[in-house]
Image (cartoon, rainbow, N blue to C red; front, side, top):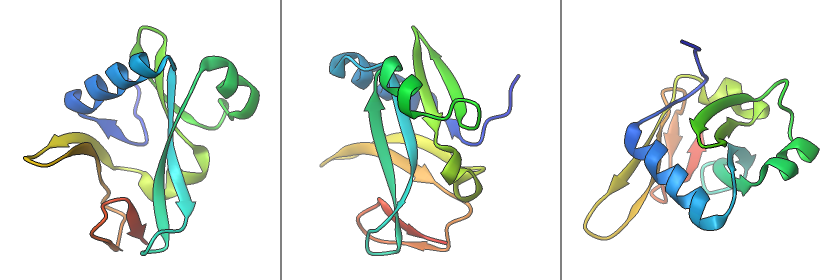
Amino acid sequence: MTEHIVSLTEDAKNHIKNTLQKMKKTHLVFGLQGGGCAGFEYFWLPVDATEYDEKGTPDRDDIIDLGDEQKFIVDCTAHVYVIGSTIDYKTDFISSSLVVENPNASGGCGCGTSVSF
């Protein structure tokens, strides 16, 4: 079994697969960018295989095969910040979203997408 930078719960995998299928995309790129109230924010970029092949870095990114030619890709620039994280799909009374449980984060914001290290 291959070790990956992050782990996905079954709920997260199912949500990603279903959403990619609805969007007619095959890959979801996950990473970090500067911004948000805490300094960094997670990004989720749905792309198709051709887009990723042209602009991605498959030799350095962590690629999790979801089956049916769908892939979850952890952008190589985020590896040091997200290593050991678990991504889950949570639903409550009001909303549902992908949630990153990141052991490397020193703080965050109420929005749930902004994080500090």
